[in-house]
Image (cartoon, rainbow, N blue to C red; front, side):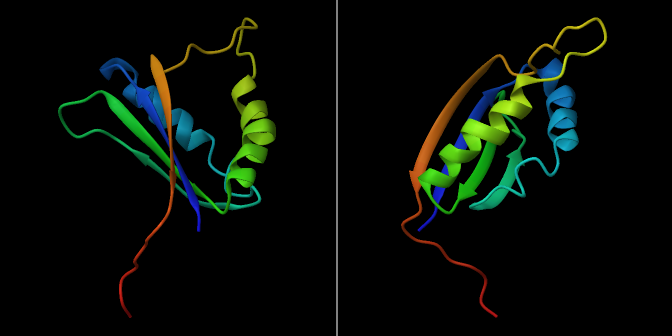
Length: 108
């Protein structure tokens, strides 16, 4: 079964829009990766400043390959005007890892 990676990003309120715009701009950067199955960016509703970046992969090896190639290149960042990379929108990050042991989909 698949593996799930959830990146927990601590995002100050004033950086929420910046984070969401950056994720929107990266559309397509993970979707064509071998073994990629699903992505969701989850915005907190209340009581926390943590966004969840949910990805599902066919295998741990597929996730690792993406991390070492596409993700590393895209997070290396292009320097903006003035030759500096943009400041990160998140002030902290933690990666959670899970194996999918059961799943269900709507019937029909």
